[in-house]
Amino acid sequence: MWQLILKEDSKWVKNLSGINKKRFNSEPSFNVKFPELKFPSNESELPEVIKIMDKYELDSKIQNDLDKDNNKMILDVVGENISDWEEFIKDVGIYSIKLKMKYKRPRPYEVSDKIESITNTDDSPSFPSGHAMEAYALAKVLSEEYPDKIDELFNVAEGISLSRVIMGNHYPSDIQAGEKIGLLIAETYLASDIKKSWQNILKEWIDCSSCGKGKKRRSCGRKDASKGTKRRCRPTCSACKDYKRRAGKKGKKKKRRKGTFTLEEKYGLHGWFKRRG
Image (cartoon, rainbow, N blue to C red):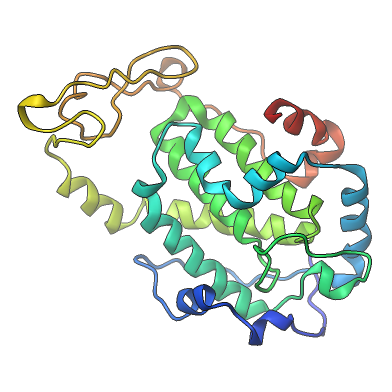
């Protein structure tokens, strides 16, 4: 069990950027009940952060993608457009900053002079990890629509999350909490009235920008990258309505292996980042 001890608050508690202030003062479109979270002392986790930073090195392009294009990386697995998920990502971001401001945990570089900030995406308190929350929330929701992609979705989510420790942005417990909260947000969203109302509104076939409109519409013939099987470019695209989304083998969902840091020693990170390169 994690222990919460007295500690100095993050400097970002009183220095939020304009975007984060706006998120903090906003309300999400659906409600999620969170458990109380605890984390170890910063000093007790710093050796593990430094160990991971010394052990792994990220290619600059991969690092930038994991840092700045993290949501696009997840959506690219299933060929979805980020514009179609802006509201969901916005909701996760709102919950992220509200939790960060509640726990006020300083970043590793605020506690240790051995760690430096190398990005502008760590301008908020540390706990929980917003990147991990977004990654696992998207992976969970998308895996319901694309069950055959569940392994790839969660592999990318894991890579995004672990990169935050490699870059010195987060402690391991930030990532673990981010995964837990991200999955909780996704599960609440999947069971919420907002998703059901969206499905009711879009129960009729409609035109989409990919395939054109009216009499000029033509199926884009989009193919699944893994097996070349055609599928609808959108759930309600009128031109692609004859293309069925593929389920997993015999319609069954795969069970993904669970745990981010519990598997680090067994599998390591080098294989994942090597594949991405």
